[in-house]
Length: 270
Image (tube, rainbow, N blue to C red; front, side, top):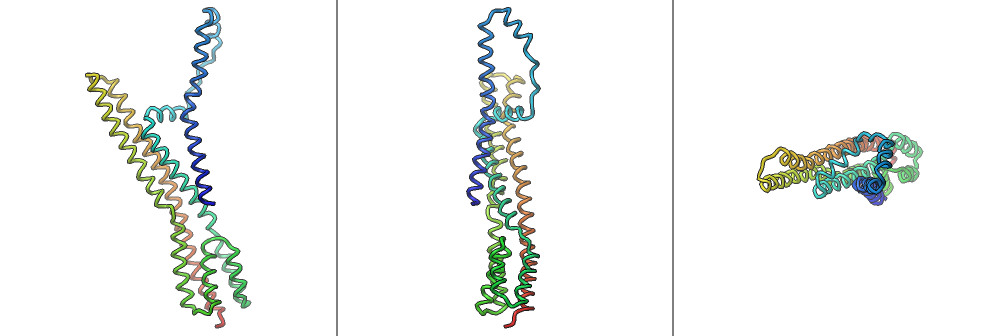
């Protein structure tokens, strides 16, 4: 299920990005066709059409971003975009997983205490199985060992062991988000260096240090760095949000495990 959600997210983002890249070309085709038709009409009709043409719409922020993306070149700008999409897909999958894992441990502990007070260990175990989240899974393992006749010390060790496993599952995929945060500006800087090399080659070929040649080459070179930094900033926000949720869930697991052991010590008759 998690892989399916991540795959659908990647497909959605890539489809949206590709449609944006080619939107400008699709808009240019009707304009070219309209220009050809105007060229074929008489001069009087051309003047009348010109008078009826509405004022040009102002450039939107989205169009500016598309134009800057295209000016930066498809090679490194495309790589940065792919890194951004992959990082966001992994981040969204982690957020969904952590949201589903964040259960109400206080309510679960109250239910377990009621079952243990009545001596219904099997009912407490079934309650944990019916509850989603890593806390319930850890408690299930502890109750299984309690039913098998193991001591409370052994039950506590099992809670610590399975707690470490559950914490590892929570942090799964977070390192890939960190890798995307590092790669995005790196490829941006690489694109800038290569773009500057191409700019100096253009200056050498022209044999002139004209401002037009220098400015255009430097602009294209720096665009990859800008987009790489933007991608890293976006992914860093996701990374910190995920890390904070993992810290919250881990702290809840530790506190709930202590309360769970207190319940077992209080109501265990063996």
